[in-house]
Amino acid sequence: MIRLPKFRYYSPRTVREAVAIRADAGPESAFVAGGTDLYPNMKRRQQTPKVVIGLSRIPALRRVRFGSEGVAIGSAVPLSTVEHNRRIRRDYPGLARAIEEISTPPLRNMGTLGGNLLLDTRCNYYDQNYEWRQAIHFCLKKDGDVCWVAPGSPKCLAVQSADSVPILIALNARAILVSSAGPREVAVEDLYRDDGIAYLTKRPEELLAEIRVAKPDGWRGSYRKLRRRGAFDFPVLGIGAAVRREGLAVAEARLVLGGVASGPIRLTRAEEALRGRALDPSSIADAAEAAAGPSKPMDNTDFSVVWRKAMTRSYVAAALRDLLTG
Ligand SMILES: Cc1cc2nc3c(=O)[nH]c(=O)nc-3n(C[C@H](O)[C@H](O)[C@H](O)COP(=O)(O)OP(=O)(O)OC[C@H]3O[C@@H](n4cnc5c(N)ncnc54)[C@H](O)[C@@H]3O)c2cc1C
Image 1: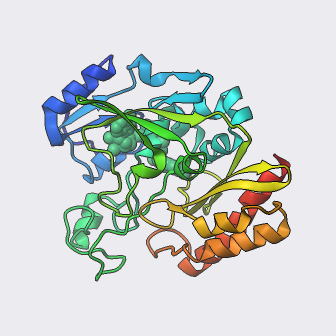
Image 2 (image 1 turned 30 degrees about the vertical axis):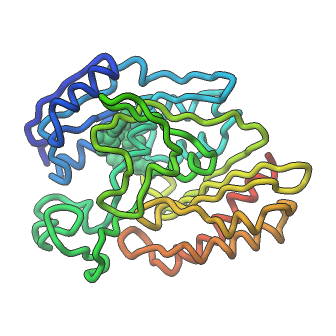
Image 3 (image 1 turned 180 degrees about the vertical axis):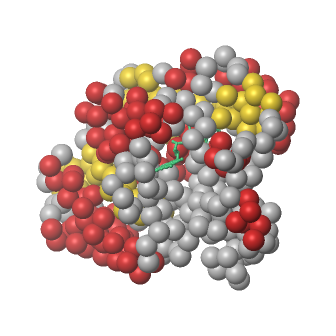
């Protein structure tokens, strides 16, 4: 059995209290929501905070609010609550689908939407216990100085693997971040960097409070995920797709690729291939072809990289075909 290291645990009741504790405790501290990512990482000594600040008892972070602008989902809302919310299923079926595809029902009861957005990047050389990593002299992401995926690489190549991220970016969602300096709002798209270590633009002391998705207003989204098993497995390719049509023609499209790089990738050429055209087999095939170029999977997750790259076309096409019925 792998045990957690010792740490001090705080359970604040307000966001203000949580960010004050974080500011006092400094870089040796971390927020925890469901703990389905942080605690396994702590057991493997990948993350070793001395102070852990629990967010699950802060009522303000556990609300789903619908308003004239759209929906605001508290960061500590469990994934299963998002997944089963009737209005989310009706208005944002692509988001509900992405969440349904995360791990397993017990983990979706524990895991939260905010924790999913901030999920640590993953890699076959990193997601191992301490002794395994020690045997290879660790890796660039933690305790070592070589990226075993590409030993010449100056940066860590661990992979963005959160299922909600591609569809939230496709839906142009916004995130509210709070620190002791006050709140700020950013596009979810701008939360990420293509770097396996510094994969977030969020400052470490900032708490993710809320995720906002605008009213659908003609937009419809879908998510398709490639993984080995029908449950439990992380994505090794994830496609978030959203389009807004005027009449038969696609007025706007947003396509996002996850699970192949350290950050999510906007598929802008594929988006252009759709704009002004009917969503039909010809435009879908052109978009799928344009999506394959930027898809450069690395050999640090499941399946062969060649096959995953080839699957990009099929998965983009499938995500777009989902939208034909919307
Ligand atoms: C067996 C297994 C299978 C899994 N499969 C999948 C999968 O298929 N797809 C997938 O996407 N994920 C998967 N996960 C990962 C995880 O369960 C989910 O990503 C979940 O949503 C994480 O949420 P959490 O609340 O448990 O995060 P936590 O573990 O609580 O936190 C994750 C990270 O975010 C930080 N954090 C959390 N909330 C906040 C906040 N509000 N503000 C600032 N920082 C915060 C924490 O400090 C930590 O660094 C799997 C996990 C396991 C163990």
